[in-house]
Amino acid sequence: MQSVLTQNRQRCNLDLLATYLVIITRMQYFTTQQAALKLGIGLSTLIRHIVNDKVPAPKSTKIGKRDVRAWTERDIERVRDLLPKIENGRKTRYRKKKQQSRKDKP
Image (tube, rainbow, N blue to C red):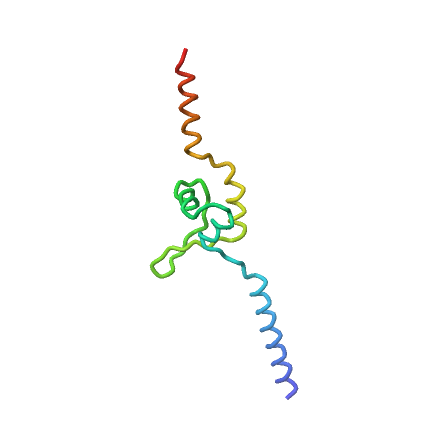
């Protein structure tokens, strides 16, 4: 009888330890829309930066028929550091044209 009780206690302690480890190691994931909201930019802007390889995105996983990206807090912070370095295409286009026209003039 004594050994059965100690085995149950040990099993219960192991279950509690496993539950604790799952809670501690569980990371919070965000959708691409939530990541864009946290970054303060629009969803289409974030997707455009991902497509143009200006921003590294987490690997997509297929859930049913959809490809889904799971963003972690670290991924979002990495993108936040890169955003100021990305040039705005509208502004740089005209700057480049001005610089070229100045170079073309003798």
